[in-house]
Each structure stands twice: as structure tokens, then as C-alpha cells.
Length: 292
Ligand code: SAM
Image 1 (cartoon, helix red, strand yellow):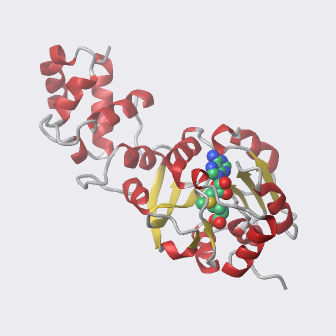
Image 2: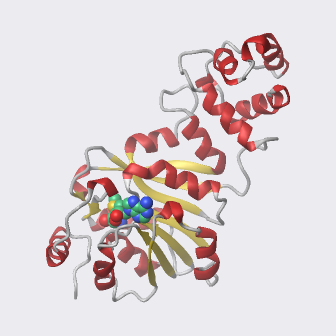
């Protein structure tokens, strides 16, 4: 029987057969450790009822493990050179479809409607290209796709920021943006040695379970996210000082902003990083009306 793709020996043989050279600019660090792949699939709870969207199948290491357990896998790969390799390595798995496209340009709603009508749940599972981790996760969430969750390998430092709690140095607008849509948990840290070639940074697997509705209900979502970003613009400054710079006529409005914060029990001398997501929602709703 053929060995799994994700072993050093088989990976090397595939790369040699096709004369494939890694493109650093595409974040190509392939997994060569079957145990890590199985842990990713376990954490995603993939079953024969699951439709899986994979981003960046590479030579198919994770795709193969997903295909063994899922109803169907649709994998988006940007690098055309990998298509003939994937056709070869994934030939034994008829439940896999590879789409040659940049995930950031993909109409994933359309893919879900056309590919997954016989699946009970949809998960995104991937070993992400690290140069584009955050835009990919934000696209998946902002597109408001009907996903159960997202289980991905990414830089440990980004995983720490995503799952951070208030008053820590990792907590920021990324933590809030992702926790607004999902319950986030880092489930495993992963050493560099399980990749070929080895990346420069440590890695982690994160699980994001998509909430039925966002964590907080805000009047104006776009304003909420702008205000959150502004509140972290200069981390060492107080909330009020960051807000004064956020409002176009902030200097004139300083006293008014302070009064509004007072009415909702938020001291403007606190730092943005100390506010919980429900507190940011309160600030956003209270200030939306005076923002011009
Ligand atoms: N899944 C494979 C594995 O675990 O061995 C490869 C993972 S590698 C970290 C990232 C993969 O994403 C590469 O195959 C790369 O070509 C692909 N990729 C990079 N940018 C992409 C994008 N914008 N859209 C789709 N795929 C992309």
C-alpha cells in the first residue's frame, strides 16, 4: 500500500519526481508529520457528514487525511505548478475537488451552494500560507459563510493574538474582530520540525467555532470595528486620547465624549486594551450618534 503523502520519504519523492521548488512568497511550508495532520482533522471533528474547504493543499498532505474522513473536500490552490501533482497524489480520493484560485478572490458562497448541498456541516481546515493568514480568516468571517468552524495551522504569535483576553499585550483589534464572530481557542502548539522547509516562526493550531450570532449586538458594525481599531492606535495612550484623534473634530468634542463615556460608566482614562468586547460595544453604541 502507498505511504501517506505526509511522510518525509514520500514528500521528497513527489517533489523530486516533479522537480518542484518551494516558493517562499506563497508561504509554502509543507507538513511531513502524519500525527500532526491527524490532530488537525481530530480538532475539526471531521466526519462523513462534513464538507471541508481547504486553503492551499500543497502536494495534498492534509487533503489526503481530510478526504479519508470527510464527505467531500474542496481545496483552493493558487500555485498552478501544484495542479498536476495534486491530480496524481489525490487520484485515489474521488471526493476531492481542487480549484485553481486565490482564496481571496473566491466566491465561497457559490462554492458552498454548488458543492456541499449533501453535507450537514461545513468546516474550513487548512495549514495556512503565513504571509496572508489574517486576510484569509477575516474574509471567511466577514463573508458570513454558513460555516460550523475553522481549524487552521498558523503562526503561534497570531494564534496568541486571536485568542487573547483584555489587559494582555496580545489583546487588540484582531482578538476582538475574530472573537466577535467566533469562540477562539488555541488547541496545540507545533514545532518547526514538522514542516518542509522549516518556517522561521513557531506554529499553532487554532479552532474557531462560529457563533450563531455575534458576541455583541451593535447598532453599526462598521463603526464598531473602526472605533476598536482607533482605540488601539497608540496602545500606551488613554481611551479618550485615542478617541480624540479618531473623531474628525475630536478636540472640540473631547468634553462631550468624556461625558458620554461617563453616562455608560466607562472612565476615559482607561487604556483601550483594558476594555472587554461588551464594553467596546457600549462605547460604540453611545458614540455612534455624535460621530460626524
Ligand atoms: N496543505 C499543505 C500542507 O500542509 O503540506 C500546504 C500548506 S502551505 C503552508 C500553504 C499552501 O497555500 C501552499 O500550497 C501555497 O501554494 C498555497 N497558497 C498560498 N497563497 C494562497 C492563496 N492566496 N490562495 C490559495 N492558496 C494559496
